[in-house]
Image 1: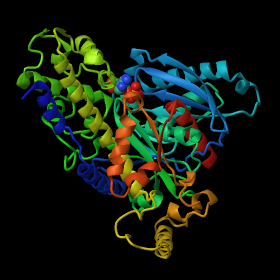
Image 2 (image 1 turned 30 degrees about the vertical axis):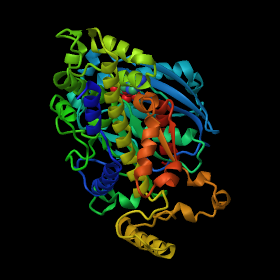
Image 3 (image 1 turned 60 degrees about the vertical axis):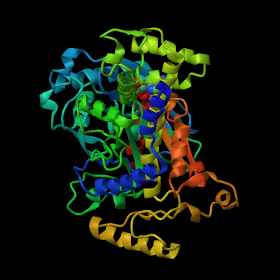
Image 4 (image 1 turned 90 degrees about the vertical axis):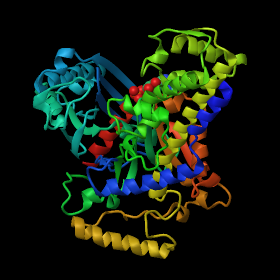
Length: 529
Ligand code: ADP
């Protein structure tokens, strides 16, 4: 076998077939249902207490802060009510000493930064009796047990933080207490997860006025949030559920899926020797198995493992000079941007690929066109599989929420609309029994196909009401060449979608998602309070 033939053989191992996509979607829908009814399963399906998504008409000035690692970001977002916004922001490095201090030291530091920011950008709010008050969305990227839109108890610190006295406390209350000591006209209105921020930011800026269904991140990691019917989140709606306070009037709530851990049991995810080597060398073997096949933190390492196989079994780089400490031999040394450069390479004789191998893999001497071509084949296979896998949660959520006009959920197949309305009434009766009072809106949506909106009744035209809007963020989806097209091709492979269903899906980047999203969640929380 020539080197290129061997590379093609490895590429075949990365193929994610239409049948596998369909099997993946089926398993994802099953695990969604499990996660919505039970706590403690692999895909945690966390209720976020965000019960409404914006439509672009929202107005006002809102604050957003983000504590996620080395920096603390403060920003104010001016929502103009016409899907546009302006944003002012500042970023402050968190002193190392505060990361391992006590909660008062950390949160008083954060409040001081908010104070400086408000004084600089919103001095009018300081005027005596101005009556102005700012609402703030707090993005806090550590594990919390959320009990209300503005209440979350810290479970544990990660990323180098260690402040024992904060564990078990409500982080919004800790921040609010320090804000109050400074006398700032600021209320911590919402605790925010970044995927929910992406969903909200897209829903505000999107040209699709029916609201965004999914917010998805494909960056260092991958995760998604979507709008679910409250009645389906049975782990919080059943009588003995340990749920906090929330507004029930929309009958919906955004759920943070934590889909990075989809199918940790490895029932349907593809598996290759290169994936297994990555998992074995990771800090959390057997965990985040979906993420390990999809997101930026991992694709470079999968590629490195596959190249090593070519080197060991097919004479790759036999004429090159390879040092012991080069990137090829260093685990986790390849950035996913390397895959993007090689994927995009259309130069004669793979010049860009060869230069990238030289620079990024640290391999010198003669690199043949065949060697470069072999690596390009591997890159393409790994990137394509990542994108096709990304279609699985998206397709599954669209199907499970009935947005395709299909009848969602098990046991209701083949029912007509009259039956559906009977089910609505039934669900309403059960809801009343479970929660004591009827919801203001029906629990089960009328399928999109029955809408009487004028534009959607025009034959042959795909109306905006039929469009299913997905907000995305992250360097992989933004920069990997052809990523969206591969996602779309996999969507077409799902029987219920086909070409017509795939066309109804619109994907858009949610720019400044974290700041704008957090501001919008603060707005929604404040307006619904
Ligand atoms: P984060 O998810 O940490 O907020 P990003 O969305 O920028 O930040 O994602 C960072 C990840 O994206 C890293 O794993 C990096 O390897 C990968 N990445 C950065 N640039 C590119 C690129 N041009 N193409 C594909 N992946 C990229």
